[in-house]
Amino acid sequence: MREETNNGPLGLDEMRSAVAAQIGVEESAVGDGSDLIELGLDSMAMMTLATRWRYRGVEVSLRELYENPTLLGWYELASRSREEAGAGGSDR
Image 1 (cartoon, rainbow, N blue to C red):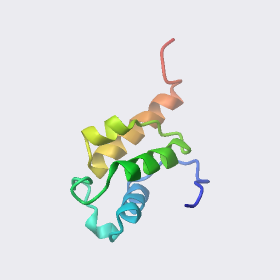
Image 2: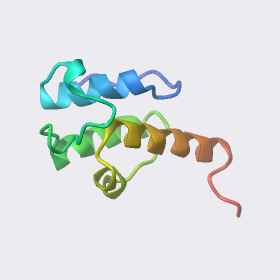
Image 3: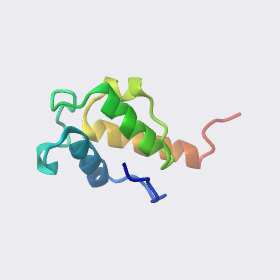
Image 4: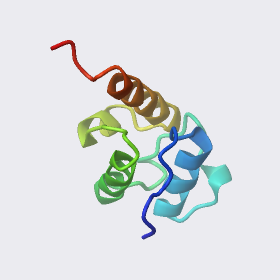
């Protein structure tokens, strides 16, 4: 596993590539709205992805990933997480 060194925003195509690599399919097989669990993504792979993305400033839980197992859903979660982190994360 290569260590993430890019600190920029996590892009949709980058997420697609990471998911495809985890399940061993071509990137073109991972559609924006495809059910990633049906494509073969299991909980261990989800945890691996979430851990990698955490290093990029994206805080998502395994539960959140399971609740909307699509690439577009995950991209929206990642975008929201980075926006919240940029805004300080809380109002306290």
